[in-house]
Length: 401
Ligand code: CTP
Image (cartoon, rainbow, N blue to C red; front, side, top):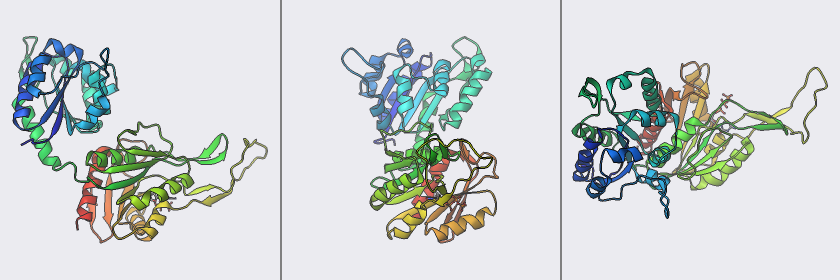
């Protein structure tokens, strides 16, 4: 049932770790390849020797030994799914805040695959407001939570907080793979993605920019990489973490640099997705020295930047698939459809700044996607990672027609 699926089992320090031994046995029986990563505290609750024997792989615990270093990036890239079971209160807090003080955390932070967690703790801890906040953070970051069960707890009390039984976790994992289907459905495809803002230089200390964070484009790069594509991300200035070890990243500053990078990358691309908020205008001349304030008013002469999407639309071949974005505040549909046609794109992903939770800097987005042949795909407000998945699914549907 799970033939060939690569699964990392993360175990943190909790009495419930004994159940994970059974889970590993179930996964191996179902055909999965399993590698176990434990926190140092988890060793007290489940034997690494037993886990290593059952999983048929070494168990990973320390970031390094005297003579070797555990390659957490390699582990993170190997997996189709990471399951942290049990998830202790302490490890939950670390996940929510991005701590990296043990191998399990380093693998989690390096993982490009989906992550599922099965919390385990006493009822009071489970119901604590901080725990609730931490769980909410994990949900926003697109982790899947396996609900805790009601029953006898390690403290002897009866209540909520028991880790789900191994059978329930296995069921969750099988359903997960059934829903996501063949994950590597973009294998062999080269995908070019633009993201982030561009900065147009005025003088050595000033620029014209915008509030784009690059989050949507990064989510797309991760989604397509997960699904087997070779991704090149051309990205303007951003504060976001970029997984540059798993996809090629070209960092640019100005619209001109982004255009030049895309012109180089596009011929080898099967699909190009232009999610960058490219400046439409740039100063005619940039001053080499800092401009001093003299007069009461100050004028900068601007010229249009090169339209990257428009250019790629004019040179694309029959086999290439081009996707643009349209961020609108009014007449959304009309403008988006206008851009689809004017730029000879195959799809336009429209989002409206009028919708709550949509726009620059936020973690969510609500999109409607228009296909050049008239089909429309409307979605509800979702995390940007889920929107990236929807966009990939729509591209899959449209490129198969
Ligand atoms: N785009 C681009 N190159 C530019 C400007 C925009 O590739 N110089 C791309 C964006 O990445 C996005 C789409 O074009 O995919 C947006 O279309 P555009 O008409 O430029 O939208 P706006 O910049 O919002 O323009 P307008 O002010 O006309 O709405």
